[in-house]
Length: 115
Length: 112
Image 1 (tube, rainbow over the protein chains, first blue to last red):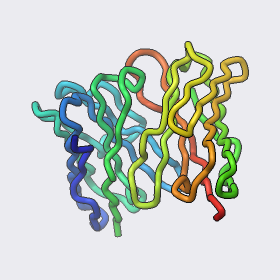
Image 2 (image 1 turned 45 degrees about the horizontal axis):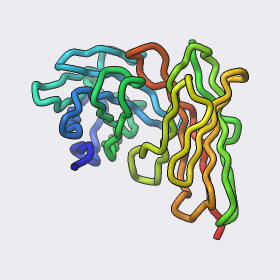
Image 3 (image 1 turned 90 degrees about the vertical axis):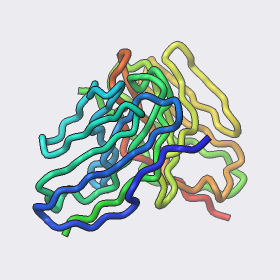
């Protein structure tokens, strides 16, 4: 069974640009969560999608957004990039909504560098 | 708000010894806990999880212990191997559909 896949794996952007990251969950998983990982802040929750609807949102500015498609694939977008957005962006999928309802399995992440 | 913290940022152990990685949580309402292992350049890998109605759960070479009285979680790795070298994260969640809150991580280094 294929795991969570994320594309692209690496990305370099400049300040002010926008970026779209993609995540394909494990087959049969309907929930997709996004996290930002930085050395200083660790793993921080961005948002969770289930059945094409955002169900939970972390404490990030509105520049961070996402969506989920009918096949459960998800994208996240960051507009007006800032240097501080440089991070590893991780996607995790699970069968059900909410961390306690089903184990979350992570993808390899997309490493974003903002110059 | 809730928070999850780790007692030790780094841990070095001899190959073959047992490892114990500790984690403290602050939200007594948390009812689900999970450990992940993250190797360099990879995403977190699920190790083991436990719910608040249990005190102990065992997997292959790993055991998670939950002490709700002192809000403490630990991961025990038996016969630590070089391949166990990684950063280990604990995370917690509470109520039905809330997201995971992660600790900062502990780096485990296995000395051959």
